Image: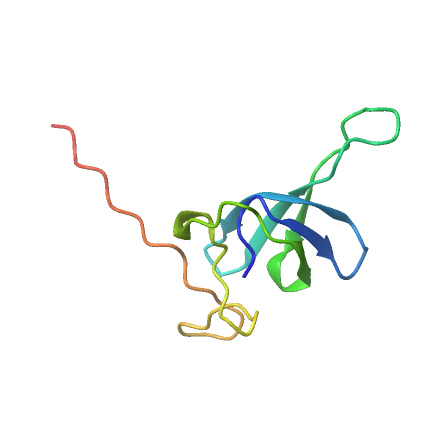
Length: 99
């Protein structure tokens, strides 16, 4: 299971880095922001957004809280609540209304 803080690799481009955030689009597409390590000169390298299906786990994060899990099934495929290619977005509480 990939969690935020884990080192991951894009199987299409071999781009490696740390999963720092993810987003679930309205159509169910799950994308993960991958931040690579600094380059050999010590300069920051730009992050990239990658489809979750294209990522493999390189090194599991030390902290694996349920809140940091990226929505995947145990088999590694995106969860399928209704349509093909759609994942189950995390459930959020609706904030109380301010009157």
